[in-house]
Image (cartoon, rainbow, N blue to C red; front, top):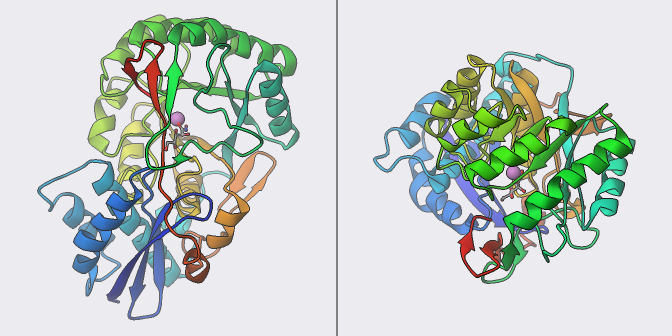
Amino acid sequence: MKITEAKVIVTCPGRNFVTLKIMTDEGVYGIGDGTLNGRELAVASYLKDHVAPLLIGRDPHQIEDIWQYLAKGVYWRRGPVTMASIGAVDTALWDIKAKAAGLPLYQLLGGKSRAGVMVYGHANGRDIPETLDAVGEYLDKGYKAVRAQSGVPGLDAVYGVARGKMFYEPAVKGAAPEEQIWSTEKYLEFAPKLFDAVREKFGFDFHLLHDVHHRLTPIEAARLGKSLEPYRLFWLEDPTPAENQEALKLIRQHTVTPIAIGEVFNSIHDCREIIENQLCDYIRTAVVHSGGITQLRKIAMLAELYQVRTGCHGATDLSPICMGAALHFDLWVPNFGIQEYMHHTEETDAVFPHAYSFGDGYLYPGDTPGHGVDFDEKLAAKYEYDPAYLPVARLEDGTMWSW
Ligand code: EZ4
Ligand code: CO
């Protein structure tokens, strides 16, 4: 089999997505997600200008060699743009291999290790009563795990809280990022009250998660983890910006609240020391941003040695293709923890028809050969790229902060 064409399509059915479609001389094609929120066109150019021409004529079955060629052969390694591009190629090649074999992708990875993939939903509200209502809605739908985020008194906008009734979408349309004000003091004062209210109302018979989104210093994160211990979180996510990996040691010295980290990581080298030193309990790298299934499974196998489990990033800025591929990975990976799941809009789902389905708190990838997600090119062509950016955060005195 030979690759005959590699097309890069940027489409905006509600939000921007980068899709790679690899065609072969045998008519089998594969699709991969290369979306990098707010940097979509950089990945599209990397793919179109620097990767697609190198794929033509290669055997799509040589997934490992193509991965090594793009990731190790290249002098400028790693980084989110490079790795999201490689992620798109790798996902499309796994899709081709599985379709050619007539098997769902999880079979090629080693088969099912579980019946379904436990997912967590995003419950958010502008205040505690609204967030409690949202948690209740997820539990009613059968979710076994819920992430709770709430607006903080005195702050206009907070990470994780939607405006209006829309599903949470962090990117805001416009030519420049929106600026938001952050106060650690207000947040730390408020957060334990939220989780006290959630456990008080709904009890302990479901998993409860929370995302700090890189806002705290190490000692503040330690204080938060300790103050949330009575509410027994499944995980506390991204308590500090992960560039400083030593910070996690300090957090560990003070709290047994489990830590999840890694949605912005793009290489096994970003994960290695954290895993080897057992500084996290869940590793969050996603198929797209970690260079595809080929590297993600290496990360997972390293993690398995240390009883660190997976908890793949699954926000709506990762396309349904990434979600489909992730679900095959999750169904197989022995040290699976949980999968993040936010519904895409109907507009998005129409462009990416998919075999995966939800039932009683679990997602199932389906048994369609490949990763089970397709791409409607004609429909996609109707939605032109529309610039949108993640917000930025400043402290109340104007100091730039981590968003
Ligand atoms: O802000 O995916 O856990 N989920 C998250 C996401 C991220 C976005 C960034 O593009 O932190 O909502
Ligand atoms: Co997160």
